[in-house]
Image: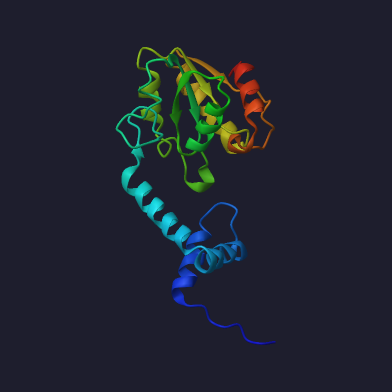
Length: 202
């Protein structure tokens, strides 16, 4: 067997960086790296600039914790939204999917994670106190828990439900039109819309 040629360290570093993306293994990362370098170096430069710009310019919205370039994001700053409803999601990607249904006109809170003790993620790591403060603003009357139907998502919903109900809030959970074990980001908009409409008290 012919020995494999050593790769330049810069290429190794690029492959390792691409492997940080979800679902990308070493072979896929290497294929991406070779494609960008060999066939589309301008796209590689654009990608690097976009990543640098995002890391520099984006922050967490002071109200919903989602990504924003301003202290308060455009959704939270929209006076046409229903301020009595607060939809709690695990990620900004989940928020984007729910928005794409065009069926929800309330506001959001993005946890940027979920309770997962084996991964060292507890209530403090997902900013529970900040969520409680947001939900207790005197305007919110219903908190919709739209965490994923995974073991961690269910644990998160159960825990948040207990804490928020103790604050006198109505807490509902999106219906299981979203398949068990699935993540909202990968579910079609129609199914998510139905789950929102059929939500139940927790």
